[in-house]
Image 1 (tube, helix red, strand yellow):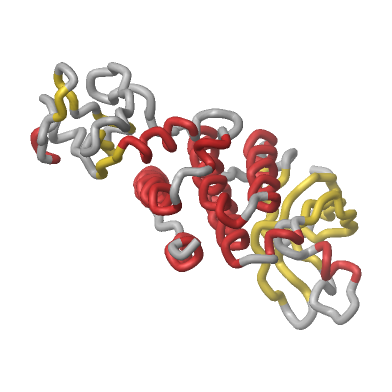
Image 2 (tube, helix red, strand yellow):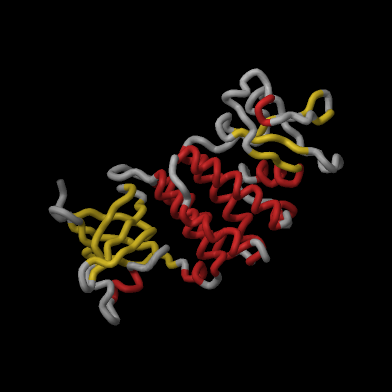
Length: 273
């Protein structure tokens, strides 16, 4: 095993270690998730202070230690200073980072996860405040896709028929099954059923409706699968984006089998935007 290795990584967590050091959790392209000590990072005017901050991307040279690896050298490649300018952007960034940490693996390349996280952090940093929640949802969907369980949003997860949102019908709605993995069509010959959650199809025990989506919410969810969000989708009202976030949050927590701690601030950050 080499005594040193190189990596390009983004700092996702940090904690004090001893009097002057910091222990960093870093997502790298080449080696996946690593933990390494940034020696002297907590000293006044230390060169490592800025390089060990959250959401800083570094070109790293790391020494292998018996118990903990140590950062021998770090050169800043990218710094997301704009994420700290508003609580909404910081919360959204922490949220996506937590989702990335839930699926990141150690000791193997994680280039796709690294690049997708960077891409969506850039979008959140550049977004107008009223669009941060939309970009958070977009990032959540794409991180779920990398994990292998993006929700099925264009066709019914029971019948596999296309589900088309109908804004012209005021009370139109679709169902969503967390267990089933996606949207459920509630229409029969164009007329909505008043299904109860336990009465959906022959597989009701395995495909219970956990959420209901109105037409606007479904259209927003369907757009998340795209590479970029269209301008008209970005204009979707915050209350609809909050409904989508709650659905994706419940879906992610079910599949990762753990709570998303960063989600606690979502309502406070975005409810009044």
